[in-house]
Amino acid sequence: MTAGRSSVAPGSVLAELQEYLLGTFLRGSRAGGLTGSTRVLDSGLLDSMAMLELVVHLEETYDIRIAADEVTAATFGTLGAIALFTAGKVSGA
Image 1: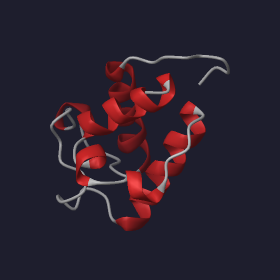
Image 2 (image 1 turned 120 degrees about the horizontal axis):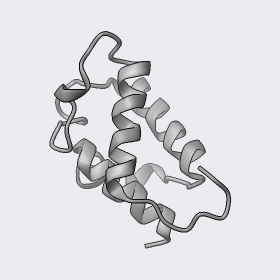
Image 3 (image 1 turned 90 degrees about the vertical axis):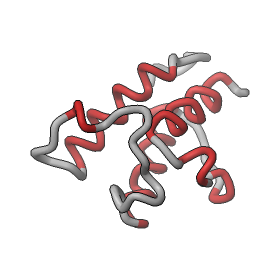
Image 4 (image 1 turned 45 degrees about the vertical axis):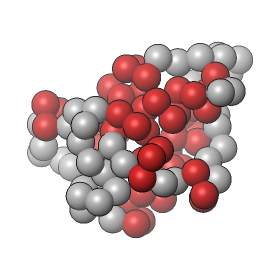
């Protein structure tokens, strides 16, 4: 993310998440299979180490900090929830 940017659209975060997950954890999968409603925490899509890597990726990409207690079913349950949470963190909400 460019320094000084104060907002990002959830749709942009979702697209970036899809690209990151496909390139890092789901090689050979199709982007169409990952949507905003794709379950993350309870589906087995990512194991605990992959979730940690995803959190670090979001922190580094969007220059945000994510506390352990923020990684919940409400904020990380689906790709759409992650995108909304990340966009909110970027904008300071």
